[in-house]
Each structure stands twice: as structure tokens, then as C-alpha cells.
Length: 404
Image (cartoon, rainbow, N blue to C red; front, side):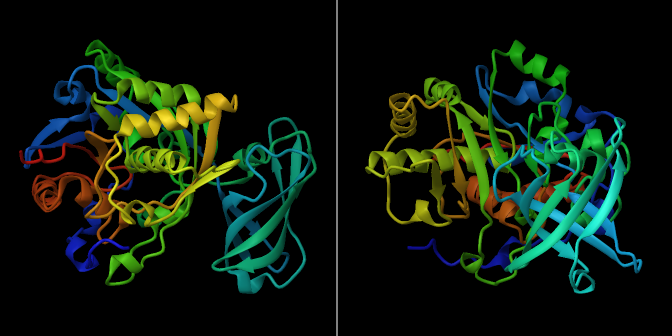
């Protein structure tokens, strides 16, 4: 069963090019903050986030780290071939001098056969990186990479050979400052090809002020895929194929969420929100007797198949008990969950997020959370000079209170 008809034209708005922030502000937390509570937008600053947050809230951050996923090769003929690394077929952190990834290939028609090569300076000597084109799968190719320093993990090779994968709508090449600024200050685990941009505003000072209000912080890892930029190109958004992303969370984090259930849980970014809601449905799978094995999977419309009234604490307890019984310190899997109007949130009491593109799945998520109020919030932002998208300003959304 799908949610009711969702006309993507209802989730469009005019976004002039000059309102897209091409570069970040000099200071991370100097961005503006639109606070939307009880259906009313208000203007603030991100550095004052603590003033708008209930005491003892639990913030959930996505600690994924953006990899330098864009590789530019030059053929002997001079042709430029761009390889965009999406996802490893054998996991991250591979050494041994060989790995195979799912990749997008720009100018693929110019790459008939044979390997591509480049040599880069690592500061500790040169490394030669080669790319061999394999089978095509949909829009992507299987690319096997080889490098002549087998002790070096592939992601470290990318640090020297690749470019920061800026969003296409920035319409510019990366500059040196993007290496730091297109990364959150708490980024830890390599794997994303796009930053969880809601977290870009956080500074040690902001975190310290939140701690003074007895807020606590928890982390999970969702590796953001390029599909996050994929617009909804069909009129009925239910026909959109949602992208799949890898989610990893530690058992101790499940325990912290469990201890905080019933309190205020605030995901930082749509990736954290999708992760939290996916965890609820993983718990439901376990309660229903499904063993996820080594990797769980949450499908796009799984949450809409039936009405479920199991409390979040029970779902989290099921995950914690499952991990404890198997002496597992963490669990990983993949989620394709699509949060759209009609979805009922179980794990999220507020949301910190940026402004999102028109006609995007991210905007559908916002609309699911605050209802038609998204239009009021976005029009307020446009009328009051807010900066939009990845390097733009921030929002703090509270859902409308339920009647009764």
C-alpha cells in the first residue's frame, strides 16, 4: 500500500539562482536560523540555537565523512574522463592495492577500452592509480581501481587523487577551503559523496552552549549517496525510485536513544532523521520475527504497508536485545525509506535542517514533518533574504501539536 497521491508540483517554489549560497560564510555558526514553531516562522541566528531548544534534548548527529569522490583522468588523446565514486562493492577501508566501486562515468563514450592512469604526489612519494571499466549497471559502471602502494587504504588514495564532490547546483569547481568547510567538525567515518549539510553550522561554541542546557549528543553513521540530489522527475512522487544508503549504529547508541525515548530527540539533518525513523522500522521487523542477518534493509514504502502502534521504546528495545544476545557492538544495513506527506513520525521531536531544492525528496520530508507550513516557512525565508541549499542558512522545525 502506498501513501495517497503526491503531486510533486505541489512541492515546488521559485528559487532564484542568486539565492543559492555558492560559498559558506567565514564563520560556521554566523548563519541565520529560521525557527518554525506552532505554525509561525521567526528569525534568529544559528549561534543562538540553544535559546530555542528544550532543556535535556538529545541531538542525533550523522558522523559520516565526505570522501574526495571525483577523479579526473586524462587519456593520451587528451580526452577528459571523470569518474565519480559512489559506493564500494566490498566495503570501505580496503587495502591491498585493488578495489571495485560502483561509479558514474562522465564522457564514458570516449573510454572505449584499456585502463586510465594518473600519478599523484602523496607527500610521502608518488602513487600511481589506475581505473579499469567493467560492467554497466543502470546509470553506473563497476570500476576496478588499482594502486601501487597496497598498504594505503583506497580512501587515503582519494585524498590525494580526488576532488571534493560539491553539489552540482553550486556550479563551480572546489577550492581549497571546501576541503574543511564541506565537512562537519565531527565527521569521522569515510563514505559520503555529499555532506550532511545541516551539521555544517555546528561549532564547539554552539555545542558548549547546548551542553549548558543539559543537552546531550549521540552519533550514527549514514553514508550519503549522490541520489540525495536526484530530483523527483515524475508527477506522482510515489513513482520515484528512492536511493539506497548505508546506515551503521552502535549498540550503545541504541541504549542512549532508548534511555531518552519520551524526551526530546532532535535529529540534525534529514539523513539523521531518516536513520532514526529507519531504526524504528528495524525494531518492528525484529518484533515481527524477521532476522536481518548480517545486514538489515528498510524498503522505500515499508512504513506505509500497515498501521503500527508499537511505541518507539519497544522497537529500540528489540534492537538492543537482538544485538546483546548476539554480542554485537553495532548493526549495519541499508535504507531506502522515503518520508513523504502521510508518514507518521515515531523518533523525531524537532529537526535541524537546511533549505532544500524544489521538487526534492528532502522537501517532501520537511512537508511530512511540518505539513503545509513548509510553504509559509520557505516564503518567509525568500522574503527575508535567507541563503539556500548546502552552504546556506539553517532551519529549526517543530511539528504542529496534535489535536486532543
